[in-house]
Image (cartoon, rainbow, N blue to C red; front, side):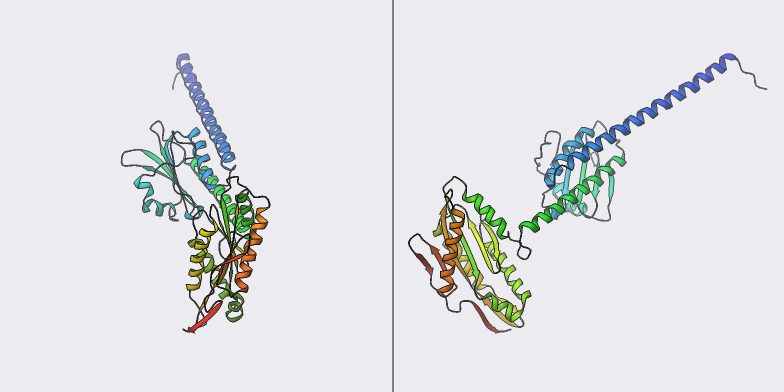
Length: 368
C-alpha cells in the first residue's frame, strides 16, 4: 500500500495546475499566432486584389508581405505572357521599382525552374551560405516567387505560404484575363494592331497636345485586295493582312502608332514628323509591301499599296477630322491615278511624290 502525505499531494496538485496553466498559455499563444496570420492574410488579399496590373500586384505583395515576414529580398519571376521582367524587392526598395537581378536569378536555369510543372507549391530552401528562404511555385506555369528570409527568423508555417501562393495565383490569373479582354477591345484580332476606335482616340490625344509640333498621318490601302479573296479565298486574304500588319509594325519607329483602320486599309500616326519625313517612311513601307511574295495554290503572288499622307500641327482646332479627311483625299488620288503611289496633301493642291510602277495592284508572277 502506498501512503501519501499532505505535502506530496499538494505538490502533485500544484504540478497539475502548472501544467494546465502552461497548456492554456500555449493555446492562447497559438490562437494569437493564428489570429495574426489570418489578419495578415486578410490584409494581403485585400491589398493585392486592388490592382489588375501584374507589375503593380507584385509591388503591392512585396510591401504587404514585409509587414508579416521581414525578408532580405523577394523575387517575382512571372511567365512570359504577363510581359513583366523578373522583379526584385528588398527592405530598402519596396516602392515598386525593380532591382538589378543577380546572375542566379536572371539565369535560364531559374527561368526554366519557375515554370516546371513537376515542382509545385511551397518549397523551403537553404543557400550555400546558410541563408534560408522559400520558393512558392505558382500553378499553371504562371511563375515563381522566391522569398529570402533575413537572419532574425525563418520558422514560418508552410500553410501561410500556401495561402499566399493560392491567392496570389488567383489574382494574377484575374489580371491576365483582364488584359486579354482589354486587348480584345483595343486590338485587331487578325493583325494584333490597334483597331480604328483606339487609333482615333490616341490620334485625338496626340493632336490636342500643346507642343505645336507637326504630326503626319498615313492611310494605306492594299491595291486590288479583293482579287486575293476572290481567287484564293479569305484565309489567303487573312494571311496577306497579317503579313502587311507585321511589315508596318516592324517598319515604323517606336513612337509611331500603327492600326488596322478597316478591311484592307491601315493607318499610321507619325508624331513630331513633317510630311517630308513621312513620305520617306511611306516609301519604305510601300516598297517592302511590293517586294513581299506570297504563294497560294501553287501561284506566286505579289501585291502593292497606295498611300495618302496629310500633315497638321498639334493643338489645331478640329484637326483630327480634317487630318483624316485630307489623308483620305490623298489616298483616293493615289488610287485613281494608277495605284502603287504615294500622294501628299497640301493646302493648295495634291502633290504626287512617286510615279506609278508597272504592275500596280495584284500580280500573278508564275506557277510555283
